Image 1 (cartoon, rainbow, N blue to C red):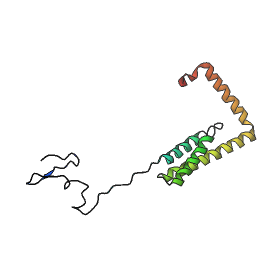
Image 2: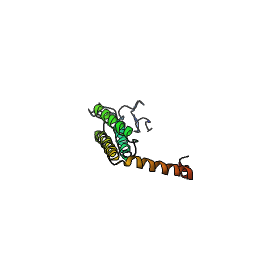
Image 3: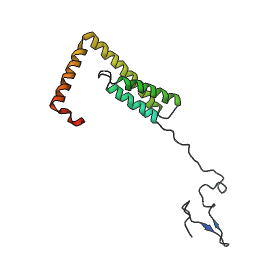
Image 4: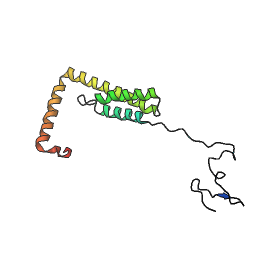
Length: 144
């Protein structure tokens, strides 16, 4: 008996020498009466994952100047697109929307506090002095 390359099952031969490969195939429905199950292709969760990642990055940068705002807005937009397209990972899309909104709220609160206390200018000056000092001492060689 030879192995059938397509199914991995041995071929059935009768006395006439005729080789029957259909009786050992997994897709044969006549012998069992059942059709083979083929699952639907899985939809990608890319939009949901992107929304979640953008929301996390936006939240992390929401207190730093205005660096987090583009990430927060993108997280909200991509999350809404994922919800409208009804792709898998709806929880991740919702989390991205929430994190984006929280990041924007934190940014607005930070701006209000900085304007009310006048500490925004002091923070910016201190940050720029430290950055200039790092440039002068060569501490940024990691990024080159």
